[in-house]
Image (tube, rainbow, N blue to C red; front, side, top):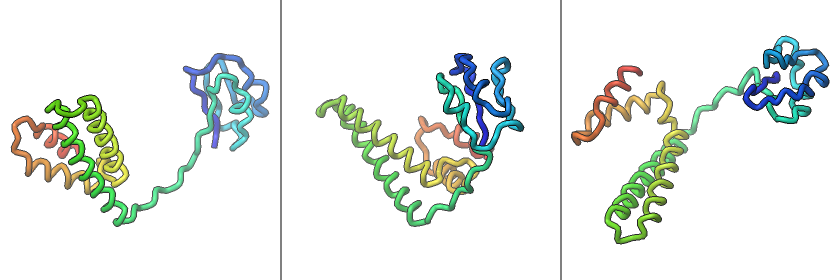
Length: 158
């Protein structure tokens, strides 16, 4: 771990200069010399009155593979949320229900569906599931309003 500075937050109070035991901080350039920074020291982080200094990990833990049962459950929940969003949008258009509530329900279901998709690994471009989803969209959609060219462009990029 080493310290880094968000220059946009830095008020140049320079407390970091006085507490850093190695002189790694430099308020003139806004940089912190990682070679001089002591791993995990955090004296500058704790002393900074503007909270402009934070710790950055040098190495992150390797991401574990998701259990296929969890991915399947997330996919089921995703499909359910998409259906609920469509229903809420239809209710909002009809106007026979509280329109604002229906719009809020539609948005809430959209956000949850997107979260399920991300957690189920569908939003990673390099993932096989993403390619399969794009291919299925390409084959199944005959609606002229559907952005087929965008799907084809994404597939070319992958």
